[in-house]
Structures are given as structure tokens and as C-alpha cells.
Length: 478
Image 1 (cartoon, one colour):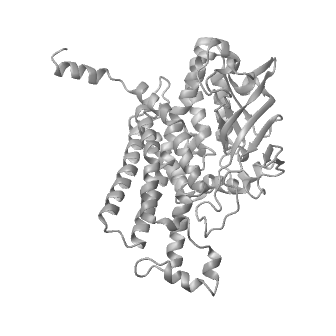
Image 2 (cartoon, rainbow, N blue to C red; image 1 turned 120 degrees about the vertical axis):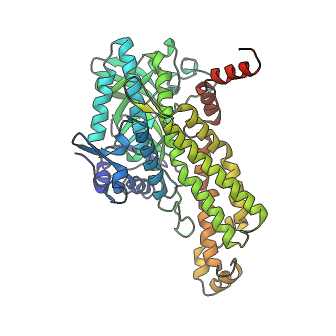
């Protein structure tokens, strides 16, 4: 089939998927008043492949095949850099909201390619063949894919087997000659309402006793028994005036329920090989945090731009404290960019030639972004002012009784009237204070792993032997 058009992508979502929104089943996600915004947003990926301005970045042609660059298995550092550049470009077009219908799925596919070979070598399984066949199916049909990894967990202090309810982690409840039956639920699954396939991965390392929970597979979203409960967060109607970033942009998040779902063996990639559950979970994270820091770049650029815009409109660009905040924001953003690029440059191949970004630098980038994000919001909001949450509506500017008065009294420096300044304020408010800003703020802390998870990975990835030996040498102890 090759590359799909945006309309072909949209039409592919008209199937028998089971989606619930605020207690009601959704008959067609492409026409639902909230979910259709997510469909429109995800169409960006398919539009970019047709746009001459982005075609070379979005599309790969090799060996007679033409396909989305997202499916390019990284074979060198340049592949990682171009992947990062594509994610950044798509997120910028999406007004700081990542598209993610191919990024996250291919992160999982790359990890599965690397780990499945290791499982086959130890257990004489054929998982790699299954993974590769599924990968080619997705690549050659230009499919949209989500990933369900985070189990609902129940009691966070207990593992899978020690839960009051054994279904708090997704598990195999039946093994049949033709496949397995799966029960459980995953949470924080992005884009699942509007993709074609969902890949399920382990959320953590497992013991031998947990082997029924050591599970990876892929199924079409319209598989019987798969139920998606979509989050209503950020779903309230908005105007372009009040919310210029998020009025027509949306990413759906779901609780993904596997109500005794049958998975044929050819779609099963791990089924009880407990000693590889942790490797697969971390292998996915290794790629997905690189995706994360790549799609954060337009967001931090938007924060700098917002601060510059509001400083100018408010007439305070030359104030010393404003200059200090701007320098901090620039350093924050450009450090993230440098670390992201270095993660690709430092990337290395496994024994089969598949490149992965450098884990140490990737986690440093993610930790740097997340740890300082709320301080960045503080600086932007300080420069902008309180009208971020106290400004008038578009109807007030249209009113003959109040419009001209508001244009006069809410103005800024010379040449900036109140309506111009309010529009700018609304953009910054959408970015930093409303439900869209809140979504970004929570993602900064929790998406792609918590701050503690990133600190742990930095500790694991750093090889201190070189610096330890250097210190011994300086001390005369070598």
C-alpha cells in the first residue's frame, strides 16, 4: 500500500472499535465532537509526507520501498538525528502538541527488534520473525500505532502476584493452540482512540513467579474485548480567541481494558520469558525518552517566544530582571537541544547494527527538562502578567459598548492595543495556565518516566570507572 493520504488514514478509523467517552459508546471517532480533533491533529503526519517542504524529512526511499521515516530502523547516528528533527518539526506544526501516532509505536518496534533476538537465542523461540513480520505490516501499510505499557498497578507497594486482585497487571489467563487470552488494563495510553494497532509491553521487570505477566503483543484496535475509556480532560469546547493553541488540537488518552482478549500466536512477542520483561520495558524507554526530549523542543521554544513577545508588548524588554529571566529561559531551552542532539551523536549500535540513542545523555536531557519546567512557567507568567487569567472574552471586544474601551485600557507599549495584547495573553495562557498548559505540565513530570526513573537511569548509565581512576591517579593511589 505504501504511504497513505490523510483521508485514507481517517477512513481507516471507521471500524468496530469499542470506545467510551463520558459513559457513552462512540459510534465513529472521526465525527465525535472531541475525538475528531485528535484525528485531525494526527493527520499532520500524513500531511507532512505530501508537503514538499517536509517530504525529504518525512519519507525514506530505499531498496525500492518508500515509507514514513518513523519506520526507519536506525542504522547510524544520522538516522537518529533525522528522526529527532522530524518529531520536532511535526510537534511545531502541531502547536507544541506531539503527533505520536507513529513515534511511540516505532519506539516499541525498535525495542522489540533488539530484545526479541535475545529471547530467541536463549529460549529457541521465533519472536524475532513475528516482530519483523508485524513491523513490515505496519511500515508497508503506513499504519498508526499506540503503545500500552503502564499497568494500573493497584497497590503500588506490591508486585503483580501480591495484589488483592490478580488483574491489576495485564496477564495471560489462558494458553490455547492458536494463541493466548489476555486480561487486565493499561493506563495513560496515548492516541489509542485514533490508531490502527496497539502494541502492549511489560511495565517492569518480572520474577519467575510473575511469568504470566511477562507479556508483549500487538492487536488491531477493533479486536473484540478491547475497550477504550477515553479521558474527558481538556475536552470542553473552546474558541480560537480564548485558546489559539488547543481549540482544534487534541491528544486522547485512554484506560485500555483487555476483557479476555484473544491474541493469535503470530502477534505474541513475549509470553512468560520473565527474565526479558525488564529488558523490553527499558529498551522501549531508551527510544521513547529520546522521542520525548525531541518533541519538547518546540514547547521550550514557545516558552522563550512567549516571554519575548510579552516583554515587548508590556514595554519591559530592557528591565534587568526581565533580561535575567530571558537568559535563564534561553539557557534552559538550548541545553535541552544540545543534550538531545548529543544523545543521537553518542548513540551506538547493538550487535545487529540497530542504533539506539545514548541512554545517559537522553535521561540527562529528560531530567533537565522536567526538573526545571515549572520554573520556566514561573518566569514566563511573571513576565506576562496577571491578565493571563483575568482578561475579557472575544465578545467584549465585539461589543460597541466595551470594545473600544478595552482596546484603549488593556493596551501595552505604543502601537499595541488591548485586543492585540489580549490575543497574545490568551496564547500564553493556553500554553501555561489552562487545561492544555496543565496537560503539558503533568506530562513534563510523568510522561515517559518520572523524575526518579530518570535519575535511576542516569546512575545506571554512567560508567564511573574512568573518573574514579583519574581521581586515584591525582591522589597518588593508582
